[in-house]
Amino acid sequence: MSLTSWRRMESVFSVALVLCCLASTGVHGDSLTVLQAPEFVSFQKGDWPVSGEKIPDLVAVTMGFSVKEDLSWPGLQAGPLFQRPRANVLVVVRGVDSLALPQSVASYPLENPVPFTLDSVAETVHSLFAEDTPVVLQLAPSEERLYMLGKANAVFEDLPVTLQQIRARLSQDGSVLASLPLNFLSRNAEADLLFLSEVQVLHDITALLQRHKHLAKDHSPDLYSLELSGLEELSRLYGKDSPQYRDATAILASVLQKFGEDVYALYGNSAVVEVVTVKAFEAPLTRKSRSILESKQISNPGSPYNLAYKYNFQYAVIFNIVLWLMIILALAVIVTAYNLWNMDPGYDSIIYRMTNQKIRMD
Image 1 (cartoon, rainbow, N blue to C red):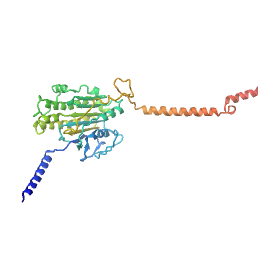
Image 2 (spheres, rainbow, N blue to C red):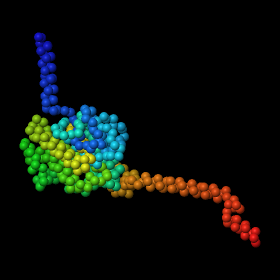
Image 3 (cartoon, one colour):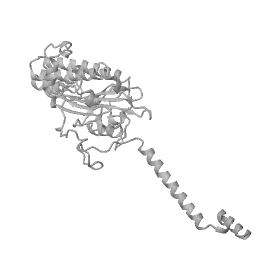
Image 4 (cartoon, helix red, strand yellow):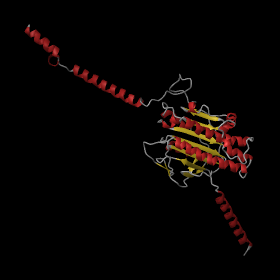
């Protein structure tokens, strides 16, 4: 056998060895995993890729809202018209392309992982359910970014936001440090504390929801958007082959699984919980905080908080009643005026008839 043939066989064997190693270690691309979903939100199992920029539209469709562009994606089928989930929870995990989640409804590859936010979905929830004050919570502990709307201001007012508050929460009673298997993770390293702080936030959110169970019984849907970047910091500091990173990945997978089950149960099996795992976004995220409140003052210039007037769902009913009542009254006036104009006083009016008879008798 010639030297060229040996080299070709060697290259083929090396490629096959690499593929076998990738398959054995479970390496996949960025993914969207549906942890929990009610029966009327039908996610189909398959390998249909979903673009990162379409995630907000996907969340809006699962909540029963309309989107500007048709979401032609076979992974989600149309459900009942008069049923919508009570909540949608989206967790974005940065620094890992996949997590070994024990149980999930479906998982799809994520392509074009560009940064995205759920601001458009939050605006829709705020505009349609302003009077019901739904819960809208967007939280990124690593960036100390928090946005709350509606009942979230009262429910999550005790939720630690800054890293200093979260680290102080780790030393209090009910901390997750007492229940987590910290094999190689340290309680003193900054990157390890950031990861543990995010796990603590997930635990505190479920604890607050269990304390305020009435939120899951109202008619307005709730929206939660959480962004976790603790694994990304651990991979930068220790590397992805380090025991710290492997322990953190296993801990986060089990915590997210329990978090999804708890939220799903609190909302009466009527919540959608998704997990987006992305190794790195392709572009930096430029985001304005509180974009809903920074819109131009158009309809309510006297509001000190730059808010529009509260939308009332009785507006359409009242508008139709006033409109048709005005039309009917206008037609009645026109018909009455026409009949009066063409009336013969001698024959059509009883007043003139009685007057004429009295004159004749006299």
